[in-house]
Image (cartoon, rainbow, N blue to C red):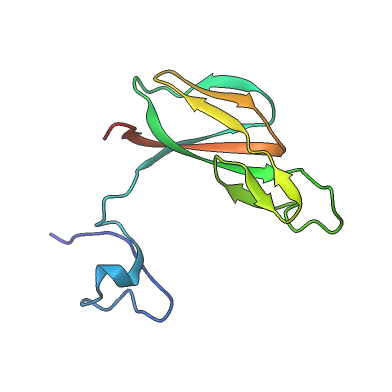
Length: 126
């Protein structure tokens, strides 16, 4: 029976090469990677149930609205982080997200116009 999967090679390498080394792949479905479950968006403080009975692993992506310089290289850019990011003399305040065994909570929107919380089906303690 055939085995199906996905391989994405790093630049300069061929993913179709059957002898390609794992270090030369950007992604392989053979590797243990988080299984994405759901993406929840927030434009204001709030919470929503995620439908799992445990605290899932997650990452946060947000679009910044901060602009104290013109032109601002970070305006209209998406940032994947849960920490404050410094860019020149601009401080971008990241949103504060909490995830427990029932809810995803946006405690603070920070300098974001929209916040995406991507949940993985994997529990945090795995």
